[in-house]
Image 1 (cartoon, rainbow, N blue to C red):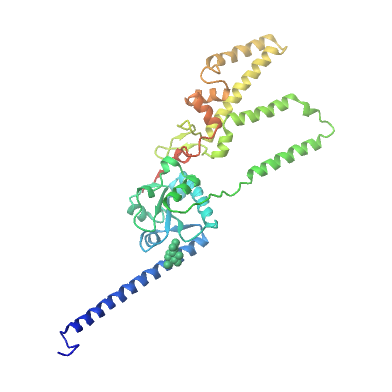
Image 2 (spheres, rainbow, N blue to C red; image 1 turned 90 degrees about the horizontal axis):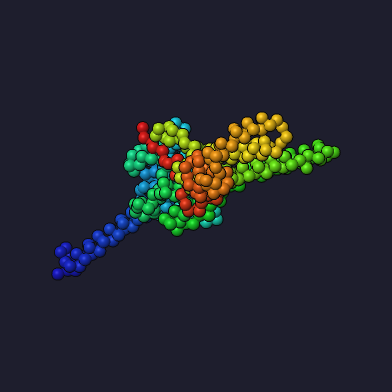
Length: 366
Ligand SMILES: *[C@@H]1O[C@H](CO)[C@@H](O)[C@H](O)[C@H]1NC(C)=O
């Protein structure tokens, strides 16, 4: 029997070897193709993100670059509805925070092709919303490099709000990327201060020959009261937390000026408190005047008759501890005194409920 004749064991072995080699070569080619595709995708994503820190995506791009394998990068997607006709004010606020976060990543020294920030707008990718069975915006989702997103890959906006820092923490949990949030400095405060200083300086300069007014008690009292009103009504809290002015319920269009929770407030709420504080103080000043001035007795008496009942009806200290601010707050809002006083002055812990939940996500559907 000749070696290599058809049917011989050696021939069989050779054929087998050839077949295996062929298969290997083919799968190697497939592997190579996949790798090329991946490299292409990564390059494209890098190119987009070099132009914009948040990549805008329509349905096709989303399916190709976010959903379909092969991928070796994480993608964070904000599903939103930014078109004005959608009337989603939360979306705009969330978008600002998201931009801050994406820029912090884009311009950090750790920036790499591991993580990309993208956005899908309802009006550009309604099909994506349908595919994911999503009917509210904004929603943040993380798409891991391997496998499908799990439950925790959807950011819990209702519970923790959408401050950039919270988003960064969530991303650090889901990926191994730590982003230090860098907020662009806000110069409006500095400019206001410079304006104030130059105004006061100018005034002093103009009146340099007559500086009597510096000793004017009323002027100083007024200035001090302004500071007190600003602080007791919670302007500092507003400054730190940046809450919305008021909240319009997207379902029934009702506008609320007072926040339902004792942990937060709207700007409108603090203005109401400010006015009430001022009114209470004004009443006190008038009473004092009426008691000590030497004017017409009848007039002074009627001032007392007019004002005193108000203080009997709402005696400061009966509802709340002592200061007019918390009295006004708790009368008006029904929040308990301690809590309302806290809401007025001290920012709650950062990991408490964020302010974002206040407005709640808006419905998007046609
Ligand atoms: C993903 O794969 C591409 C192509 O192989 C490579 O250039 C890139 O560095 C990879 N990215 C990561 C985060 O490993």
